[in-house]
Amino acid sequence: MKGDNAKSSLWARVFVEGIWTSAALAGIVGLLTGPRRAERPLNHADVRFEESDINPRYVVLTGVGVVVFMYIASMIVYLPFKYFSREHAKESPPPLPISAQSVHGVYLPPEPRLQQDDHRDLQEYMAAQNAKLNSYAWVDKQQGVVSISIDRAMDLIAQRGIPPQKAAPNQFYRPQVGTLETGLQGKVEPEPR
Image (cartoon, rainbow, N blue to C red; front, top):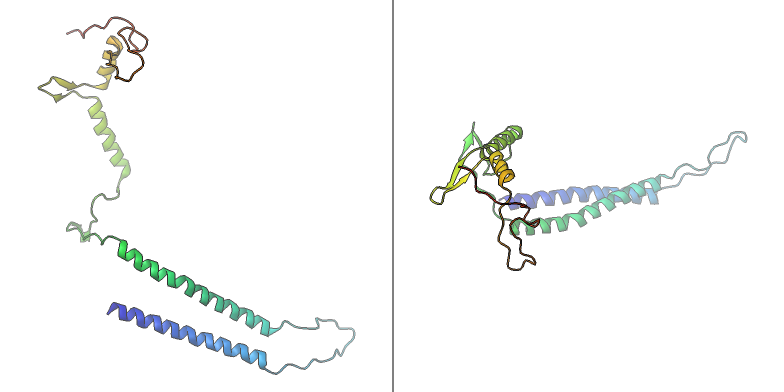
């Protein structure tokens, strides 16, 4: 049913545009074949004016040419547009189903949704991150791994230095404790209890 309406409206538009085009062409033919005005000789020698007015035929021909060019150009653009819109519809995924959630009778789109208050969301995010950075928590209680606050971790690094790391097998040098490569110059002592 929808396709039939689209076809009938397309044919109606083509019919109306055809009538306007044929009327314009009939007007052009009438201007080109109509009777010419007789040239009148100049009656007053002291009066000066342009010897010829603008030719209305050329004005109308220019206007009709512009209209015909626009019609042809629109048809040239319309045909590939219809083709590519059909191709896009074939390749596009189906539309998402409407969510069952609604707020005040308006259905909400699926997640993720746009932020409604980005300033508040950023503050909440920063507060959560700062809470993680400044708190103590167990990471793995059985292994004895804990998460400490970042301030305490920096204090421990300042006191003890960076512990030596195992070198990768393809590394050119082997860092040793207390060398410049490890960033640790001195003796490593355990944390006081």
